[in-house]
Length: 211
Image 1 (cartoon, rainbow, N blue to C red):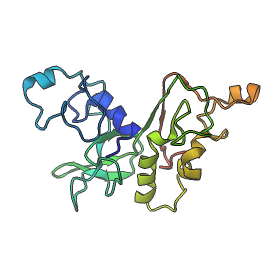
Image 2 (cartoon, rainbow, N blue to C red):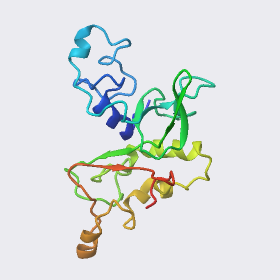
Image 3 (cartoon, one colour):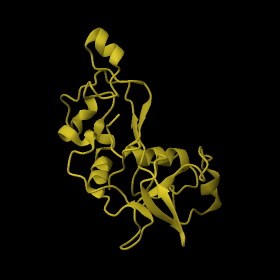
Image 4 (spheres, rainbow, N blue to C red):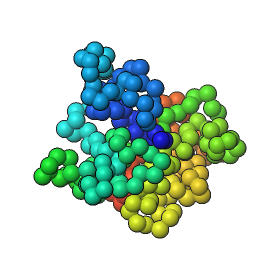
């Protein structure tokens, strides 16, 4: 199964099972070598890093439901993404999620995480197999998740701007990722934070790629 940027962000901050990150993780969606169920022996938990966010305020939810008729996840059908892995959501509550018997909360939309590759020196989406693989930021890191969100909310295809043009709207000069100061001065598309990471929220309108 695929493992998107939003899921990797949550693993890094909270651990795949919300019990802390294991430094030997292979960042796989399915391998449980370092996240056994249950997490025994005690040595496994002793090797974990501490939580970098408080669970009470992290807004972390399962990406998908645990089974038919359940309401314990954000989406009914997660496509190629693992439904049992967690994502951190923004604060704009858009969907009811059951987190315990008799307890329901309003969950926001997953926060998208893109990690920069400083060895790459362009940001235009041109070339590369697969597309985006030659760029500082790769739009495919969360493309499957945005597609899931597009299908789940019932909007016509393309309502999430970051799905436009097969996902390459991510590199559009009009979009916020491009540093407008550099574009104006040099006519070069260059992203903000080219040596670290960017986070994208769907915001109050629940659409990825709007202002």
